[in-house]
Image (cartoon, rainbow, N blue to C red):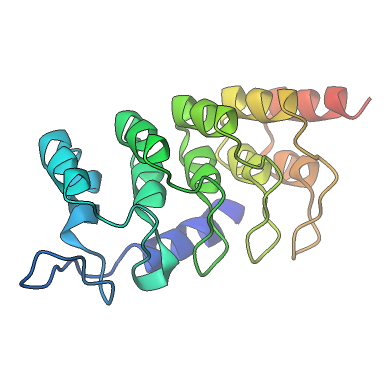
Length: 186
């Protein structure tokens, strides 16, 4: 159920059109072509966009940023480039999702590590009080759960629906994650 709720929200946020205006500036009324370039992993076009001084922290429909799109699509080098150019690692979209939330929920371990090393808050909450740890637990991403726990992710946070990361793990029935969470609470 937790995964379904998240992915419905995820699809709603990323299902908008992509546009640029005639002057090659990002049209923030719709997700720009820049975001399509990121989703498709076109690194050459990506480098061209960032060399034109695209607003690295600009927001499009749903409040998404380029860093969120790169994190949600597993584009590690783009994530590194964006952060290097000043992208804010803890920015949140209109639903409270952050780059770390996206990477944690989709199993992108290297991006999770990089974002944390770049200062991302491991306990950042979305509008439903879900944490990156809860998203990693929901997706059964054991390695990401370990990373977040090692970085002091709070296992006691309760989401809007009254569940902690441990409750989610128990509902998912993953004994390895349950053990990791129980061991970290001692």
